[in-house]
Length: 333
Image (cartoon, rainbow, N blue to C red; front, side, top):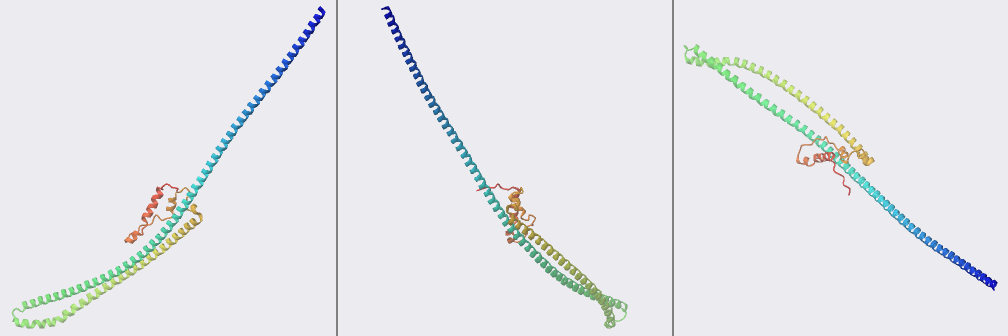
């Protein structure tokens, strides 16, 4: 019975041990399974968090890429707008320069035409002045000749009257001397003899006086002829000198006109072929300096009638020179 009891106890112990082992094993298995499930859950949670972080990072990266693309697009659009504005400004500058060059060419053409008209007018005025001076000189010479002839006639008449008065005075003195010498003789005899003596002496006095008068007239005529020859020589010399001076003036004017036409043609050809480069816009000059280079700033103002004043280009010339010194700022529309 004790052996059975011991066996029973041993059997019970073994059974208890087996149960305990089984429970421990089941607990261990349950713990292992629980640990595996917990690890699986933690792995799933970690994977989920990693996925969420990756998604968030990708979203952030996408947002940053979108922002970068938007910034790049804005920068490109800004650059394109700036380039378009620059091209528009350059086109406006070129259009303005072409307009200014065209206006300068038109102004130069107008100035050239005005200069040619002024030169033609000055030439006509010089010719008219020379003709008037010649007419005035001829009229003055004619008046001077008439005056000298009248003075000579009056002088000749005065001299003849003086000679007649001198002859009368001498005759009166002779008569008085003859009357004193024949005071003892009867006055009737003296009076009757006086006409005869005067008649006898008259031809001699007339002959002597006539010879002296003819001699004086001859000398006077010779002097007048010499003076007239000298005046004619001086007149011819002045005429030849005036003709030579007029010819030299016309030759010099012809050369100046040829030079001006050649320079104007060269400028027009340069303007037609070179555009803005011919006007000197690319050489550091402003527009108005190029315009002033196209006109003649040394031309003198012509004094004349009201129509000449209306056609004068002095105000335009002074305005262009003022604009050259103080150019206004360019305004682009």
